[in-house]
Length: 405
Image 1 (cartoon, rainbow, N blue to C red):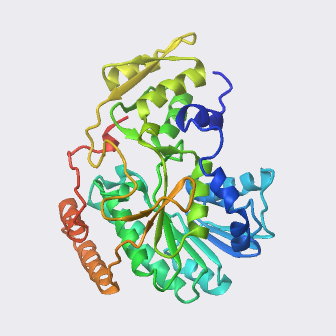
Image 2: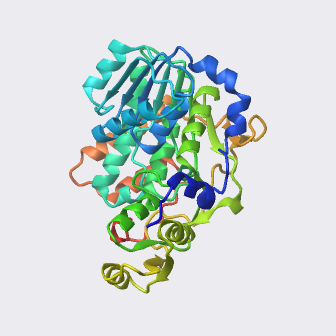
């Protein structure tokens, strides 16, 4: 294996950008960001994940007075702490505390009430995988985490409102075709209903290259275990680097007006297929040429028996046939008012329609009633979401990503 530098690979073969996509926007707004962050108290929920931790790194180029981080991933928090304390140029405040707890737990409410108020609160805790909609159990957990707990958090924050609240969304919330995207669109509806009481912004963004648990991240795991690479060949996606994901969220959190939805102004020709990235990855990682196999079985057997001096590596590329997969992604939809002028590489959806609190409460009553039933099924949940989100056109094929390598 060659000495593989992941960040360099992302720059060269995935984003194809030599500097951050948001470098100019960060430079143009440096003084505004410093004024909003320096000396302030910050709470980051879900801060051990790829986007949350990248947000923290972007934040620590400034000088917050306090930083509290909450995440259920205890090992992830440990690595986050080691990483930020080992990185040159990051200003880790003296009052830095990582907490391995769930933001839906009672102990979290104690932190908010006893250690607050916080000037800046950013929530990255979410189910983010399309594969998380395999059945009604997984969908219930996803909606609970992405939607129901978001409302509980907002009610808690109303006791001592922060100057800035950010809750991460996804490009899959625009004309959603999967329950994950629909759950994030529901989250957007919830936070918009509160945007007259709290200063709230969010961001839809592209796939984060090599984020924890992603298909691209899995390429590294597969190589370490001498297993074949596998990916769809017909799905195109926009990509940002982990660093760019954190910067996008920081800009949206600190500079957005209440109700704003930020997105990166990427062009269609910047989209990539997973299979093309896999082929480039094999060349950079070990000097391999992709050996395209006709089946998963053939790919697994070839990987198992791979000679140590092989110049090829088995891959299985396939046409996508799983539920909830779009052939392309979009950041905004017809009818949304979009500001393309305020930032160099950021668009902002302005004045999005807001549902009333009565409508939100009615939806929550229906969701909780449905989840309390012992006869719950996936179709019933999807129908309820469609009733609330008329543009949700669920793509159901009967196959899940968990049925793929």
